[in-house]
Image (cartoon, rainbow, N blue to C red; front, side, top):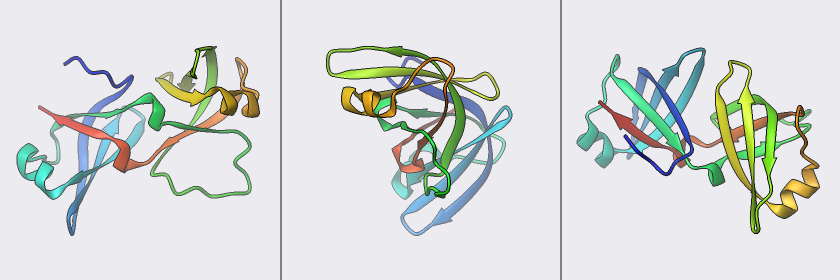
Length: 140
């Protein structure tokens, strides 16, 4: 499958919760669990089930990078402690290449202002996060 989403987490559906108008899908991706929210209409079309192979995709602009999150607790369902591997300077946005504690790559596209404000540099530990409602789920 080809996709414009830079971030793709492949794994196995481990749990499904059906809520009014929304399904919460828990996908085990190696040592990491990634959550996706899909509409009831999408669930009817995809027919996801526990044990099924799935890919959770999230576009880089949906990934938020946080430095020094303590003492706050954050509401994003998907939170990953990462190390900054590279900051690619762009004309409008910078792309931050991240690596989580399990060696998985993650990309975040952030504004130039945010990049300067956060003072991101290689080797820095950050928290990368994205909400489950910012994902796209693909199933086999």
